[in-house]
Length: 482
Image 1 (tube, rainbow, N blue to C red):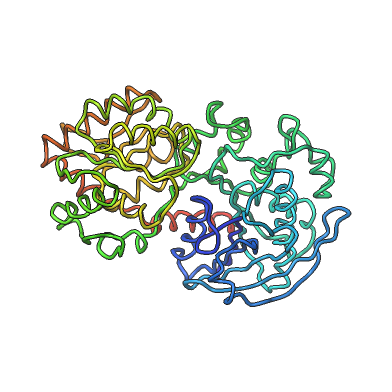
Image 2 (tube, one colour):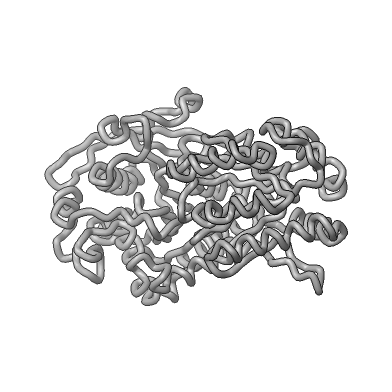
């Protein structure tokens, strides 16, 4: 049995702030349990979901030396859907209402967590063949492993893979302070190791010291090796290109299932979608205070409202789209104040054409995925993206910009060959976005047979975790056999 430990700062159902939690909470359940024993280790945050606290069992405690500091660490254990989870406890570091705080606090918190993960392994009697680290919060796991613990026979054969979910967030802080926090040797704080543009960089450390690096889509693996997408680390990514893998994320087909989803007005499958989806559309229009218009092209968005997600393009084009097209928009999310206000403005001006919910609701998100005609994701960059896969699962056609995982997962419609699963545009330009929305609207309105073909192909494309899990298994096997 091959032993794998996934290490992350968050995972559903315990704690979630973004897509990282979905990935770490889903992937272990889809890896072949006859060949791999995959377990997960997380911080035990004070703000984690209280429903699961009663299931935690105390395992052990020990102390972590961070330079001159000596900090308590407890380990708790639980099981969820057949996967064993461990939780590192320290009330000083993991207190508060949020898992993440100021960067100067988080660099110490996650240095402690990274070292505690490694020190816990012999005490919980689990020696993984591979430790699978995720994002900068776990970037010091490979660093501590190779520099501090590598000579210990227990750790000598452990391999590491470091997954970059978003290159933009790197865990950067002042070199002197990070040296004081971690107690790591001064000679590794150099430009070829942990130092980057005058700062210590946790993500860079993970990329330098891990045996393999992965990202969450093949296109994003190429993007981060370019000056435009590398966020200052393109040279390192290019140097490690032989150890860099792009594996597209999947979605949980049990959670996102149009045949059983309890949030839907009418459940459907690929055969009944053309009839039953109309009922869901009408119900969503009623719920969001929009007129029930079957012929209106209903476009959904579920997203953080930021420039990265393309909301500056939406703001630029919204007036023209609402004033000239037979469209309706349903928007769910929070983010920058200017975008939240923008939706409020247009909702007051065009109450029959746009409705926004500033906040987040998992139930409403499912209803938007299941009920809209199209789903808009005009991102500036998108490492993977999950919403386009979720919408396709329900026959809601994605309209995306060709970047990262959006490019890899959405096959652009070709009217001459009658192929594709969605619509896309290449340049980051509001007019290009609006043009492709107009094109999609034309197909929806005037070419129903072709539109229904798009819906059928989108619903039958497999973006479950099964495919992705096989690729991670191959990566684990490659590392173990080295």
